[in-house]
Image (tube, rainbow, N blue to C red; front, side, top):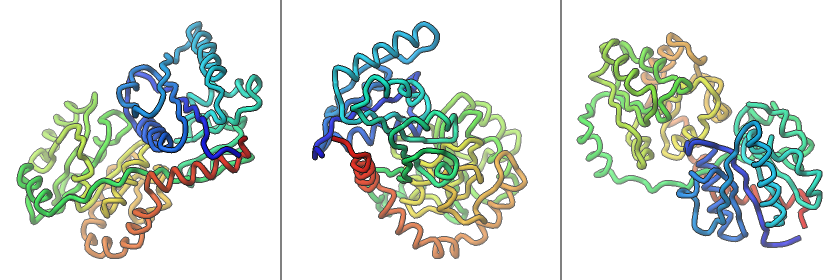
Length: 345
């Protein structure tokens, strides 16, 4: 069994979008490249985000006739690199790789399921990694392992930095601060959150950008809550906002929000979320609300804000566990153990 692997990661994302799948893949590649030979096959738009120690191979994943060309190019890349492992990220990449096992029987094909979309495509994989218990209970594979998605732990902000940020935003020290982070599209559920904020005596920071941003601005004015809603935009330092906030709200209408929950728990920030998120096993049922339900989210927020001091004290063991288990280093170690368990070499 080799101590240094040659690993090819395949990510079929398009349009240069940097969501949870893309951030997870690029961070994992960079971390594994410290000790292994790592290649990433992805759309050329992701080259700029790729770590210099990772060997990047551009491939435009297409449909129709172009899909045949991209499949042939994918075969050429893998045949040239001759990796020990091919690791596909999410269902799009796994779908494109599922027939290659017949050509490369000496290579182990591992997949990571990030959400519940098209879970049937993972059945052919030699090994399957899932990122939360929701997925663990939903997929069928002869070799499946739960490995929580980890992050590089951000530095802790000083009291002075947090105070400066509060001053710059014009926040009221006497009122709770809520924060939501994500791409402002139809799946984020920010419109539901804004409606739920009516008659709640708290401030909301909206971190992110997207096609719905102007519509959300207009909605805040229509609801007469624009004085307590702050649209901060896309930020590279979003983690400091989680350290500033009293509560993180994840109103997503789909299940791709695990990264936000992880970042919040790492920052010792309690989370209220919809009950479809993939990380709900880390949260108390009292902190979960049905998706797209304004009334339920409003009631959950009101009850949580009233009990914030007690909640933070009760969640201290969860925060400490998150800081130990939900790190990139821990995830990488677990991933390598999973790969070794597939009897590579």
